[in-house]
Image (cartoon, rainbow over all chains, first blue to last red; front, side, top):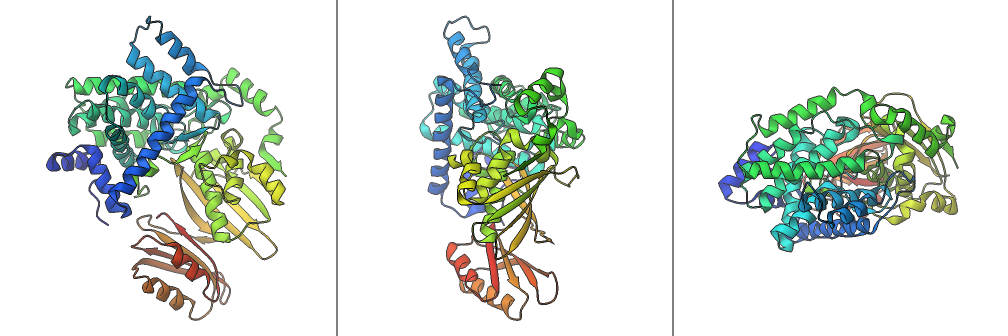
Length: 302
Length: 220
């Protein structure tokens, strides 16, 4: 089966040779791999964009998870942002609040679009709907933003991992933030190579991040890791657009992430046995949510 | 290549909270139901690794049951799958296993009714994507490069020829094929990877063939 790219080096080379943005190369590869028409593929991504938009809107109204661990922070951040006192800047806080909004909806078992996973679903839409206010993209450019994030995610998923259970949080929010940085660069008018640099700069700052959810719930610290992932994506994109390059090539950064994930102990890969999940407060919350009787957690019969 | 589409990265559209533990789990249940070919009356679900440790918080249990009821990842009825199963009269049991499997997110589903029993081992490999690694004790070695057809059948002369003829009649090319059986004359499994996307018409045709008991498709 024909394939246009299987790593970042090839992706950038094809984009440069064809003089096309990365989003377009992703669409062409999708057409080759699935034999579906451009219209069908574009329409499906447009639908995903609409789902993301709804999740952000829903979260900004204020939602709370059944466990009570998360919810309402997106509203707090938006309200603070509107006072004009923000130190880190309005666009950045807007992205952070919208990332949080999406993840709060996810924790509440609401409808979201995984990007690349549900636990990391806030970063791509959070950054997109914040950058939108500054760059004023068309709807088509917003859909293309998603194809560009998808191109990088596709490479990470096939060459490393996007699963917290396999590779830790670096594989989830790490991938999402790096993918978002690459797409922000493209939307802001950067080159394909600059997208790759943005990806690398962010991923290098996510390496080693473990997956240690309290009580095994996609809430603490997941929601806040989406917040910071969105912030890193914006800063990384700005650095790449400024002309900063990564000393280590993108594919080698991805390979490093993969190897770090493989050497992570299982307690730090989504088993809720280590890290923040194993803190006294983490354990107390787990006992409170699921009851102290471990037996009742292990076997459910109906 | 395990991931073959951009929509496995940007997607699926799903009910939270976890793509691997909720959406991937729902898909394991859904594929099991498809392969079984009907609504099971009972299900015994063994969970391993991270699935065993965190299934309750991630809604892995309701998602698998939802899948067994035919609900897709974005179906809001996943939230009430336990109640729906009870209403339908499907009994179920979850067993958290200590044993370590190759993949941290592994589930073994044993499902059945008065007519028969089926056992499937599925893994959730991230972002909502899943793979079937074992069916009724047959290890599956799918390359993941091509759409795959799984055909459970009785070990009788002519079944393989009938299946390959039906595929050829659709102008489809077989890329790779593997046949295994439990015992001579008993249950057998064909795993067929094809170059083209499998359509519903072909699946119906295969299901109607003599000695074919279950048909399902994966990864297309």
